[in-house]
Image 1 (cartoon, rainbow, N blue to C red):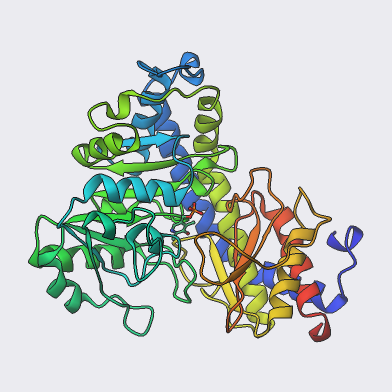
Image 2: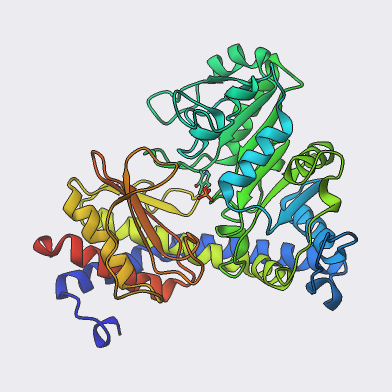
Length: 421
Ligand SMILES: *Cc1c(COP(=O)(O)O)cnc(C)c1O
């Protein structure tokens, strides 16, 4: 079928056929998770009595915005939390994480990063080294920072976490990998990290950066003991439909604190009109289990194909998934750029432009990003990016539907590795 639309080499089509066969049992597991999460979602909508009037937003101050508050309840139920803030007013995942960190931490408190260095853009928020200097980082507000590096770059150091936890107010855990070469953490691993931290500090507040992890399993990190989870609506939970936004969910008292930081201390979550955003937020959330499953299938398929090509992707196609990312080392800048340009060519929007590396705010190295997306920068849509540094690792994620994303992955592989096909 594919060859009717694209000029793929016969070798590549043969590899595609093999990969589709090998992925079958893995896809079945993904579909079982999807079906469970979708029915859980339906129950959250029906039990909370979502009604047509909730899909219509407010203007001005947004007091008594019933649709906004209802969405919080639905989301909280779906992720197993006491309470949630789902807001189009969160500008990105980094912003939601920033609101949570500033909401929880006060001068003199310590933030402990238990799973190594947090995501690149958080370095400026925390004020690690010179990052964010002069911009009002947590460090400049008197919040101290400590870190437990991962053992061998991929395994939490439970002993050290237990040792460092007593001095800390908040424990930060990152579920997905960011720009590192470890697989995402399973909920079992997250649970062990939390137990290690609580073994020496029962009051420590555990906050999980849940970006890319939502709906990849049937449970969320709250079920593993996290107090708060944070993420972006232009990733998994927005289902490719929410045009912007993020969330904070977890313990009711902590969510409340985050509300005061999101708007104004003393006013909190009562404020914030939703304009015309609610229908898309609800619809996107409703679709999120299915869309996330399509992205996970794309990730599994890409891992399989890359493994057949001898590219050693992380994770392997048979590994359980806890995020939607597949990475592999391109080895040289040209292959990374070609791969990203191939993904762009297989995207529904802006397929005819070629992305180039550039210096992006919040990132230390030049970055190349392919995203031919309906929502600008959305990475639940098929996208690929990587920093221009050794070993030129490509991070592939997303895919609103597997059939189209499969073609995109093939275009990227053909372009980057044409002399091997
Ligand atoms: C995407 C992501 C973030 C936040 O990124 P934004 O681009 O600000 O939405 C944070 N942590 C991880 C692990 C991520 O994948």
